[in-house]
Image 1 (tube, one colour):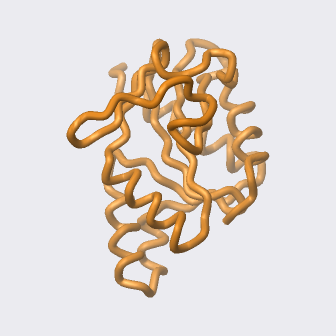
Image 2: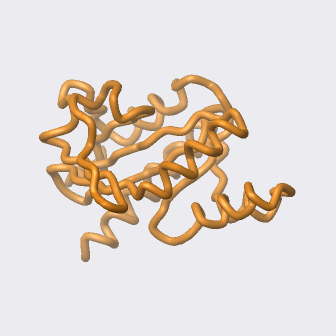
Length: 165
């Protein structure tokens, strides 16, 4: 099984776990269809493109899910995605969170981190800045003591996050 297939399975298991705990998870494509403001609609459509993995979790906010199929975690967040999420945060007054998942080979599926800002915990250091993206290395940028151990605990942690949507 390829790393991409494994990563998709981890992401889907995480989203299914959120739903099994009562969360309403909506895709950006679905939100784009319902949006009346052309700017918001364009942003939702852009965030709905393959590989962006942005969702609205009602009562929590917009989540941007990133998966690494095996340790150590290494993720890239496109600057344009962060800018769009920041815009939506400001104009729709909805929280935005980054969920960074690292696969496991057991029933717990993945461990991970929930972050709101790059200069606050679980970050120890700001991610690397490249031309078009932020690069996050688990060992260099994140506090291992803040790692949440299992998709179930990650989902519970996310659902317990500041209610904003």
